[in-house]
Image (cartoon, rainbow, N blue to C red; front, top):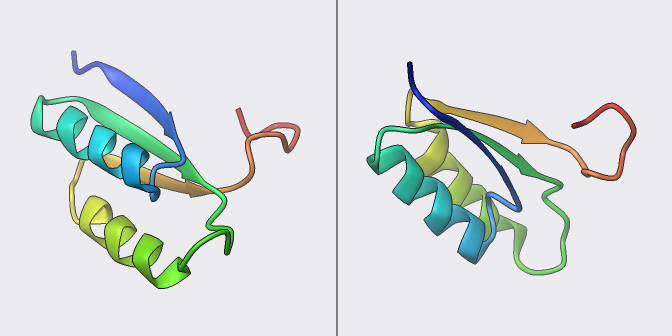
Amino acid sequence: MKRTAIVTGSAGFIGYHLCARLLADGWRVIGIDAMTDYYEVALKDSRLALLVAEEEFTPVQARIETPGVL
């Protein structure tokens, strides 16, 4: 059975690299990101596109403080 990780901020710099590493190590990853415009959204979109190409990655666009997200 594969291990599953939930990563918040998955399209950000640290979150993206953590997701990529977990996927490379055989984990299933649920990536949560609000995709805010704190910095360039196009950069986040490009990182997210790379993660979504992985079969074991599930993206969730949401804010973690929203009731019911977690």
